[in-house]
Length: 63
Image (cartoon, rainbow, N blue to C red; front, side, top):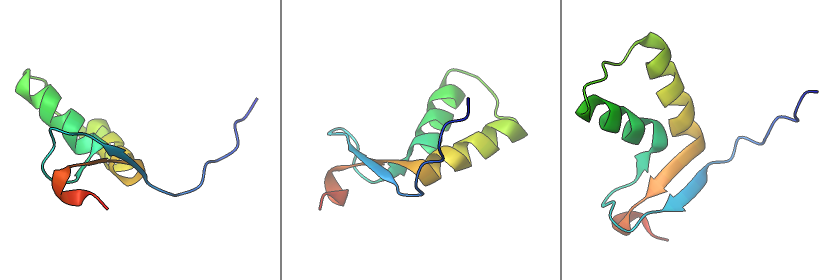
């Protein structure tokens, strides 16, 4: 069974401790790098896809 493709809209998730808008992929990349995981090419592609889909909205990015 194939799921229908979702629209290309960005989901904005408010996070109180984030100062600026940051993509989910960048946030996960920073977290994994902090614990010593080195990024590879598939990881970079995954981060880019996550950045396009989900943005963590900080205090400065409220609308």
